[in-house]
Image 1 (tube, rainbow, N blue to C red):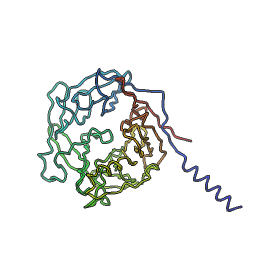
Image 2: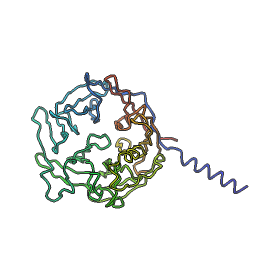
Image 3: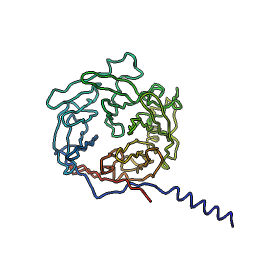
Image 4: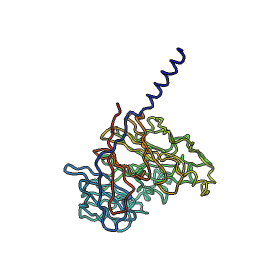
Length: 366
């Protein structure tokens, strides 16, 4: 009888430990952005808090024009023609100072008010000291437009993600660059947020999970790195790896292992790998001091609507507070954005010329 009692009490303790300590609770607030007539939905957005009202900047695909919305009513308050050709990424410092990177280009530009757009640097000419290992050719600024790999600005420096050549050993991959801008000068260097040595393999690859790494920068100015195929989170400063923390989703049940390098052209194999569950990205919520790790679940269909995703909620010390599932038929997995009120999730019903976001608030469970 005593043995059965211990088992019963143990089951209660395990069950209680698995209960979420925090959840994302849907509010009554919906943000509706009224896009210009005939304009495709925004592929990249930036939240811009101000003293009077908050703004959201949207960049349509294959466009060089930025649209600034008042979030309270959704109206476009400013249209900024940044570049004649399509942009790959942008960062709004304020309404009169906007940084941008043209698509298929290697330059960072700054538009200040009505002044002519000005080039700050071209990394292809700055090869001494870092060489091809860092700068590469043709892929330095690829994938910047993905919401899970945005440009991050800290004080006078930009942290700029880049893709990894799928045919190269991850030992030589430098997925993050730090660009420090001071008036008309700059300094460019790789950060140490590389792939950890245990993933360096001469004759195999983690493709397509190794194309890019997602980053967040916390209030301590530490770089938190989320690798698509790793259950670990890696925490760096600019010069060294500080520590790693386990952060496994219960929905990533199949190991995301390396494959022989010769198989990267095997479309059937790569297609199967893309359908597995993996880690899409990491977001830091500075207002609530928590992290959100986005997990794409295993899918059985052909579009993003055919699979679910979950959001892991972690406290400032990377302890798991909960993991919440969302349907791909309701929200787009790539469009999660932190604002003052909570976490915005973009709806998939985006056919009427209006982009809609639901706002979720973080709620501690007692």
